[in-house]
Image 1: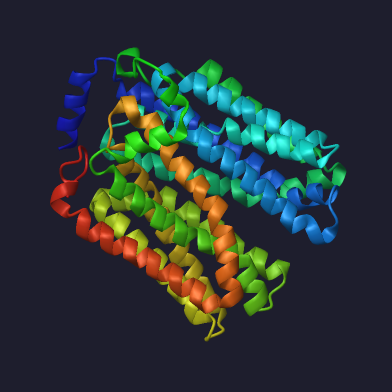
Image 2: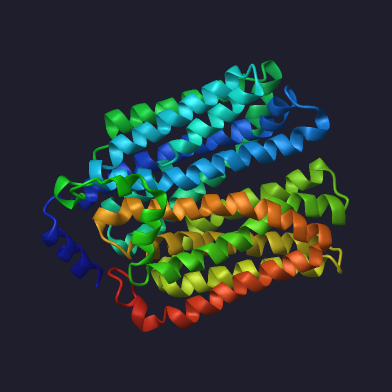
Length: 422
């Protein structure tokens, strides 16, 4: 089956060179690694940077506002940048997006006033297209059946970056508070140089969209175009349910451990280290092995069940205080995420051709930005009412996604996707 797909794709596109293009994908992995390290360097310093301009009791509000501004800008910009990459190619859009991040973090490092921090976040958000463009690049450069593996590698190097970055950020921040932000900007600029000098364009001219209109700069028109495509709407709904369940865990878990278990920073930090280790092992080792023995649909459903089980264990831990239960919850959640997320992105990339990959990935990134705006607020309100209700809701949402996946994406339908073995 795989040889047939490969031959077919080569016949359809004479410019398709799997070996050379796959070698260039490691440059993409390197770029993601640099960006992940840089981001993890600055994250621990954000409260202190905001604290320079706000009273201590308002720092949380300032942090939330910065996150919301960035997410709102990303929501509107990501589909537009994705569509532009379909028209002009991935390389130029990736460079512009990365340069926007450089400018944003330089402004953060300069600081001087709270409005400058917001300006930096706005610039970074309005040029947010690097993730969607990177995913589109991977889609352009691989056979459909191989994309899940490469999306898994992207997630694993992001996990590696999260392990050492915070400690380095703390060390640099002790020298000068703005220094980690300048270091991050420098790392991202190295990514710009790597893209410019080492990365070839992946979208050949004959595969690009031919025209731009005013609607090309209208975020909601891109949503309309993508959601009218057969099969894509339900797939995106599936992704939203997954990211809602995962987001409840991500935005609430530290507070949960602090309030319910009365743990301090050291123990919580140790628990979060388990998150990074599980993420790397799942995406870099377990996922490639599973892909050799099972189809992507089965792995995706298993990932959702694992995530739902982990959320259910957190719910149980409210009534059964146990380090073992919490540890198992983390393992199930992170392994579930590591199995579903790459298979979901792989299946999503197979739902459209090359000329719409950027727009589709942009809409997907935009939906995740909307989650990042809304989930913290909704999570806080439900958690204030009852932590048990919050995690019961999260468990129900994710298991509902598993049922939808199993029922509406049957095995026979999966076989229609090129490169997927059933």
